[in-house]
Length: 512
Image (cartoon, rainbow, N blue to C red; front, side):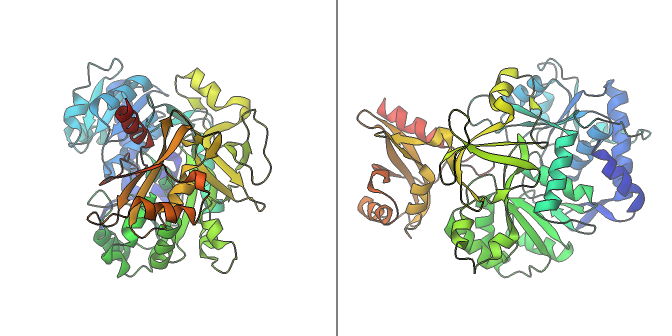
């Protein structure tokens, strides 16, 4: 099934209803959006001689033309390659080359970098700037009929963030995207017109994927004029667009929960905040619940199984009377309706309740494999399960708690130490604003626990003894850090994940 069929249907049934908005202004009704998509699809195929299955990349910030381009690609039977617009020119070049993209659609902000790649990337014929004369020409073409696609045909090449080595392109099929959308309705929220989805996070990744079920049901896609997360702007948009949901990384949720514009706003039109992509610490989550109320839902997933492994529902967040409520808040919830999830040992044997192992998942939402990378595909999908690289354990009711990425596990003196539990302990100290724990090579113990700390008050950071005492109130002595480093900020990628690799490399360079 081609996901562009949703746009075609809404173009008939909801022709005069808003489909895409920029801030408070309607950019296109569903009738207008469907016409633009069908015309741009014809323009892409005819102008560049593209055939079904060819790849077209998108490198642009969030804007209405992003959604027009994405669904035009699908309408034409092509494969979309949404690229993180914050990447370096050379990183963008690698993805275009690896995916074999024939055309790239971009915007003024990225035109210089992207247009310079035409001729140097072997398969790249052209760059189209949207909005712009060339884009206008494409969208002025005579609309073409929707191209039928099979469930197992590629639809979206989702390139990983590339925190280690070159990024890999997870091949998401039409069936994967459909299953992800249906699972959203089953486990997270029903959606209908005139609900709305706010794209404050990049459409190229999580926000674009969470937008799919909203597109399927005819909700309004709202692009903030700022292009990002601004509390005052979001407070204003909540007055304009009802039934609003949006995806946010935990760092974004924390920032909004402390924003006076949000704290003092009328939140009655706020439906759901979907958060995920990185751990959200308990204290931050409780603060957010105090501000937003029972509107938070957590999704644990990866690009390889598009945002669908487990979920912690709004009901779980709201159930303060449950004696295990705080314990639940530190989990990532229950297995989603459409998948099987297990925790296994190094030999692939399922582990009993309470034991920590690698999280594996299988189901129709799991990617077909990595684009042009059979070795990585075989490794990731061995035994018929997607091996996530995340370490976790189930409780007796089926709630999954993540411990860490397997590569972040610290083994000190033969003992396994999971950085997150040390980080949770340190965050109890009022003088700690943020912390990241990594392993440092140690000649005696193999690895030593080391903490990078951002102080709440830079002029008066807590002492190492104070931090030790805080740790010893919550965790075993052997888990406490052997050293502390105060920093102004932790290095993060574009999605708010702390880059522990950089912290480890910093320590290794100093030791060398």
